[in-house]
Image (cartoon, rainbow, N blue to C red; front, side):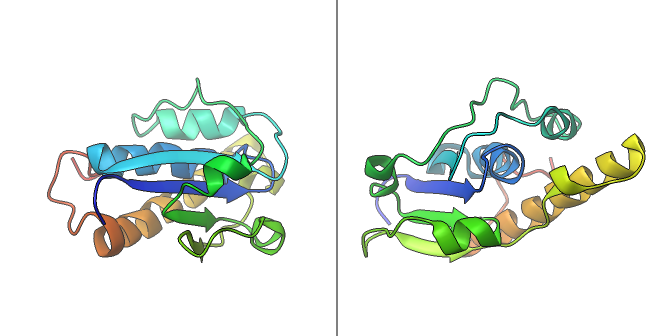
Length: 152
């Protein structure tokens, strides 16, 4: 694919999973990708998502929670849904946009002590990171022997 791969991550509220995926993909993809995230609704960026991303050196504190911009969505190479709701309700895209579905549990629905909830956020973050490393290596970049890798 010529130029940078354009990828949009989609979730229901654009507050946790899609925000973490955006931050991770920007780090992993480096200058080979352009990344956005959006939701069917805008719920605000979850402070726990900000915290667990900061733990691995990725700052998403300035991200905004945005609703899907259809004209921007149509410019993507990939539209990746991260929850069943977004997968089912995502607007139709042009045939040039490859729609993929990478389902992850919603950490915002975790219950228990604060540490148990944060553990769920970390689990989802790490699961998204592993899936994105695989996707980017297979579809976009080719390998992770470059500075953007989380293994650095």
